[in-house]
View 1 (cartoon, each protein chain N blue to C red):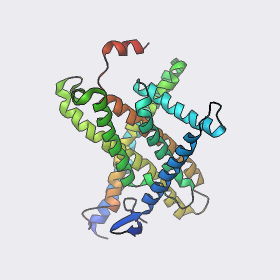
View 2: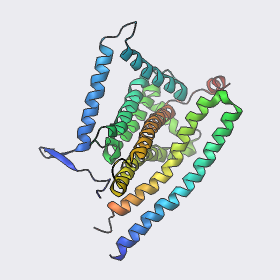
View 3: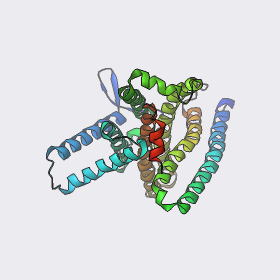
View 4: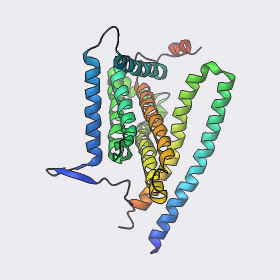
Length: 81
Length: 229
């Protein structure tokens, strides 16, 4: 195994693992805030949960970017061709 | 292990390679069009069970558009509704054995995100003319023009990456677990995948609504003040 493949695999693992930390913390905070808001104002639950879903999707995209980078490193690495 | 970025060719139509995803997209398109045609052919005041179900779907889409965009849903119902139904059906097509969801491949998602990009321009121009649409780039201040312009491109890209990443990762994880643990073990993961698929279809439709609503002419401030209690 040459160095480039080794570095790609390590890079992919690091990208996914560290890229998941930030969005996980952020999603936790967002859900906690939304729960708090629903507990205070149950009649606004529909609007809050819709906004929550959209916000979660936005946050989640950051993790998805990392996943795509990892996939590019593993399956479409331009340096290995 | 096959790459999730590559598409295997099923057969060739002249010089054009046709992949399995394209075929499943065609089948889905045919099924949805046929279903829509059959559902709307014989509409009655007293609905049958099927018509009542379809009416419920349409009313749900209408309510979502009204809540999210705060406009009358009629011009947007067809686009948003078919976007949602197609992605939903595509994500759940993994229930059929041997079928991989077409949304698990980059090309289908790219096409869908590009459609949203074009729809934002089309609805924006139709609502406010070219002047009104271009003016939305200069809100809240002309300083934001470069940022708004870049945003309109990157949000299309993120729409594409979000749908692709979610659906593809589900399919990929099921493949890995299946190869490691064997039959029947990935069933809970598949159930989770169905939930993710439904949520992603909803999110894609909602984000398309949000983007289209942003492209419409900025509403007068007094109207906004009246609508928020």
